Amino acid sequence: MADTCVNCSAVLSPSSTSCPSCGSPRRSQPAAGASGGGFCGSCGTALASKFAPCPKCGHVKTTFTPPPQSGAFCGGCGGPLASKFAPCPKCGHVKTTFNPAVPPQGALYKSSGTTNILSILLSLLILTNGVGHLYLGQIGKGIGLMIGGWVLWGVGIATFVFGVGIVLIIGGFIVMIYSMVDANKQCKIYNEFVAQNGRAPW
Image 1 (tube, rainbow, N blue to C red):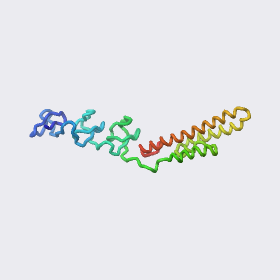
Image 2: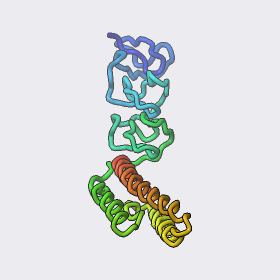
Image 3: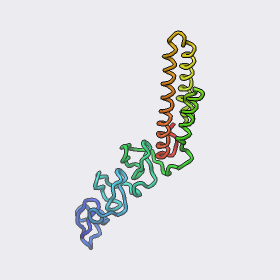
Image 4: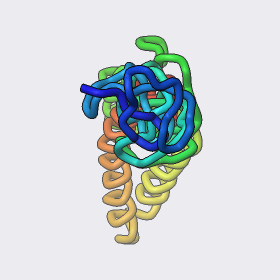
């Protein structure tokens, strides 16, 4: 199949050194559908050659980039990127932060077992909520749940004889259950974020 000009797609004769249509120096491109190993710097689509217009978005004089999933990750959701300035295929984030390093494994992860033990056992044994959140690094939330539980339990027991205390004690139980369930949920969110971004989410 005859070569075509990378600028205007005009057919080039075997002996021509420039394009007869636009006058550009000869830089032939493979037939449509062939890949020259390059990818569009705007959308990450495979290019026919380094200087070919992108067949998907029309980007011209595009940055010549390595293949998709080359170790770059979206600064919005952590999904793999085709190139530094490519929109994220997962969340659509544009002009994203470029992270050239693959997220580390192991060291930053939190154990769901430890989270559950801390949040459930300490809540049931010594009426101390929020310890699971403290383990996950949510200091403010953990302390808030801890103090809130103590206030509800303390005032509830102190006013139990007046009939109001029972409502506060029930409130204490609600805070305890919320603390247990939410700690487990936050552990999953924490580990998913670490897996995608290589750092703690908060």
